[in-house]
Length: 225
Image (cartoon, rainbow, N blue to C red; front, side, top):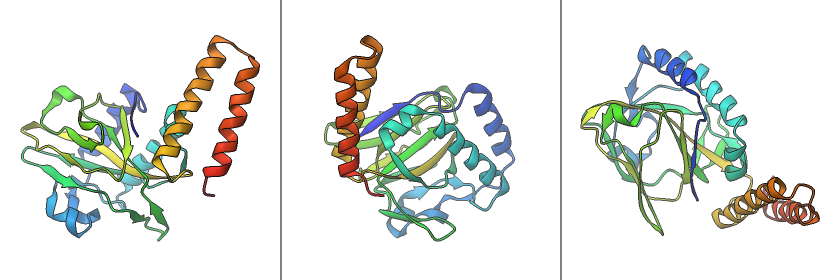
């Protein structure tokens, strides 16, 4: 699964995030990288313990709760505390696969079924910096408007191209889904969208009721709670 979720943050929220992050205490981005990823990673990151990081992480989670598209696609059981990174000129992150398990500061383990990047810099503010994701359908180069999010499978090989001009600011995090299998989750998402469309075009149709039943019975069968 790979999905563009638009306007998770609006322009006012993005501006507020950027103002807070401008004076933040950035440090070496390898603080959260595993051994292999640390060899490929070259960027700056805001420590989770930083008060600004805690404040803005909570704001990202609140914004995600208001996004029905994100919820329908991810079916989140646990959203790892959002982190923040900064790529300056010359920074990049070579090909890597995200760790299968991340541990919150509380020690809680989180299985990384999905990865997410929430863009906080506008595409015209920097050159390079594309998130490049390799999938069975090909290679995808992603550079979204500020406030938009891309959701994709954490099993993919991906990278961030080196910045050649400007700076790229983003939030990134992982999701443990209620439905572990990417194929099953994608089927539920497609079914959910079809039900929504049917209800818009034929409100109250008996077929919609039956399809909602199918959706929930599949979710009941596939979910891990």
